[in-house]
Image 1 (cartoon, rainbow, N blue to C red):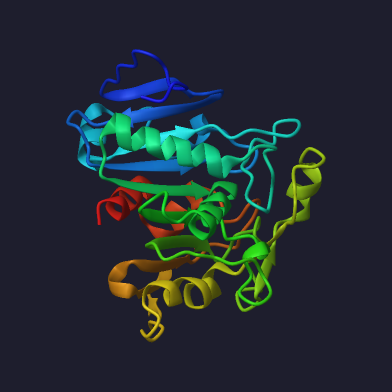
Image 2 (tube, rainbow, N blue to C red):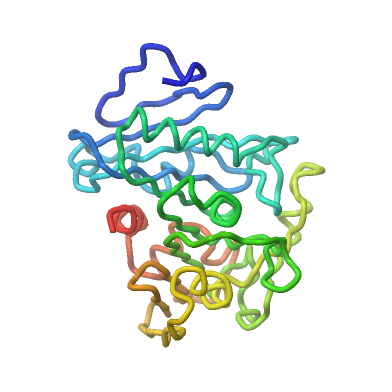
Length: 292
């Protein structure tokens, strides 16, 4: 075990809270039997690991629910350059530290300590943006990727942007009524811009660039080509709740969740709104993606 990890660590079924890796903290939820898959989930900007755990209903879940999901869950805590803008260094916001290095180390910990053979990384909002950075810059660290309401930074734009290695299975979920990403009326635009009330309300220096790539267009321009370059772009599949695209034998998936009412507040940016609008349970979707 790495010298920076808790000495004499013993993990139990259910919640293992406040674990440390160097100076960083994280929580782990385990099923009763040793899992072969783990999901590392990154919270959004201004959030924390506990809030994301609550968004997935894990703190109140009985052990039977964790067993049914059948994966280990790992929730690391982001950092902030000021105030409570806890986030990740992902070219959209900055935490002031090298989060690619931290999450690479956490992935190694999970493989060694949990004994899993497959690691999925995902995140909500700014956590999804960090997931994109990992997919682009360090795709060999994790096996599968999923971004929830968290597109890639414009830094990785297809023309004139930084190189994006990719090449690993990727699922994206985003809402057409997302008022944080300002998707309404901009679904054909190449980029979206994070709402100014969030940018202006964050600690000075927290935001690097609020412009992100259109997650729907990214299915074709950035993901499909890296896994199945000769495959035609899948036709959209429509339902009353979502539009979906699936390519590369199911390894490249995008869901555009349809707002079921006129968006207000944050729109369908929060996980619970995506769930209710899309009629699905996020923890189930994440576990199923990890076990593909």
